[in-house]
Image 1: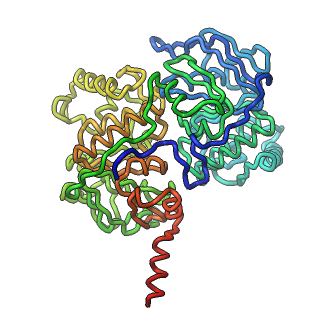
Image 2: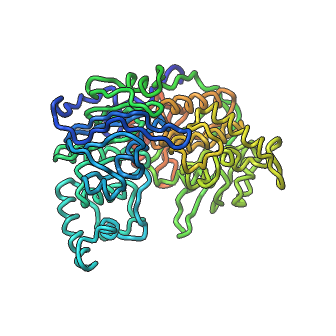
Image 3: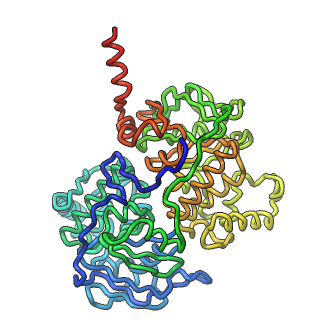
Amino acid sequence: MGGVSTFPIRTNSHGMTAASETPPNDGPPAGAPLAIELRGIDKRFGAVHANRDINLKVRKQSIHGIVGENGAGKSTLMSILYGFYEADAGDIFVSGNTVSIRSSNDAIAKGIGMVHQHFMLVDSFTVIENVMLGAEGAATLQAGREKVRRDLKNLSDEYGLTVDPDAIVSELSVGLQQRVEILKALYRGADILILDEPTGVLTPEEADNLFRILRQLRDQGKTILLITHKLREIMAVTDEVSVMRRGAMVATLQTANTSPSEIAEQMVGRRVLLEVDKGPAKPTEDALVVENLTVRDRFGVDRVKNVSFTVRRGEIVGLAGVSGNGQSELLEAISGIEAPASGRVLVNGKPLSHTGDPAEARELGMGHVPEDRLRMGLVKTFEENENSVLGYHNAEGIGGKVVIDVDAVRNHAKAHIEKYDIRPPNCRLKTANFSGGNQQKIVIAREMEEDPDVLLVGQPTRGVDIGAIEFIHKRLIEMRDAGKAVLLVSVELDEIFGLSDRILVMCGGEIVGERLPDQTDENEIGLMMAGIDEAADKAAQQTEAAQ
């Protein structure tokens, strides 16, 4: 398929309207009272000027988006509003009254709640126990538990936030865990809800459900602050949007009167290509071969079932599927992290021995960008420069098994920082102190710059801003055009369609079909992800009729 493939502005198969086609939001009237006003907010972390004299007005009973590139200062600003940080200068007004917010308890007392990007839940506790933690609400735990149960039922009925109060949190889906976080905030009396990158870990269906909940919360009097870098979400659900760039507030716009391209240009400071521009693929020989692979978990359940496919040099093969259908386990087996129950993986014609050491896969020419950067891609307590060579620290020019050339490592990291625009540009900063999108850039840079023959990419743009998405997509196309084999796993159908030369669909641990992007659409792929292959069913019916 040649030409230009659109991303990320499309209409998807999950019922979510594409940004460019979303009906305008009416939004609050111009004279509506303010829920939040920030005046002259300024914050520094050493040499880093995170927030620069920021002014912001958020109207009551509205959904107000805050967008900006990774490191633009969005999360810092919201952390000041929620009391995690204290501003060096400036004033905060809630419902027209000046307030002092020095802790999250102060924010909660002022009716402000926050749902964090990485949930603040105790996995081994029940829903009730998580909600009541720190807000027991009665003299005894049993009385408090019954009060929470009653209040949760009322909140669930009022806002459509149904969840089993006795369920263990670790056994809930990510979407339901996020629902628990929202319930926690509402239980504590929040009239203003801050959501930080709320769809970063959600499937498209879960994201659609979240938007329905947010609209209902707004319509019933709540004010929502939505921090995101996804323009489609901004266009689909917000009434107004404020844009931040390099710590400053550069624009506030009525969503109905703007466009994705205008917001993107404000975010980045230049025109941004909202499309994947690529020519036709020129695949050659097989670089990655997966034969009859079965992966079994520790409970004896087959998560990947007899999967076979190939990825050739010079092509990108997209693997589509709803999260939890075996894609993660498949990537871990292909990369050498986990041993399969049966089957084999060949890289450049050589089989992996599956000793549980991914170094073997790297030596055979494979790079791996894992789906979960924090669990598998980074060591948060390491400095950026240490993570920039993680897994490649024995490479020539960097070090060896005994001694590592620290200066060489830092210079190596500085080159990555410049090329991939990692912010802040400080290779000595602990990786935990980078935003999620910049953490992703660290992993992407490390794996791509080693120039592997085969690149496994899991959710490459999760938590990444629009400018970085454009850059990462260009780099993936460049790798393809340089004769590399790329296996792309993404829950974003827009990304799958925009980048892939062939699409494999996974459901229930199996490859249920293969399609060419120009011979299918998101509706068909969405049905296949749910286990429905209309084309195969029709062919079977025709064969049966012919017999």
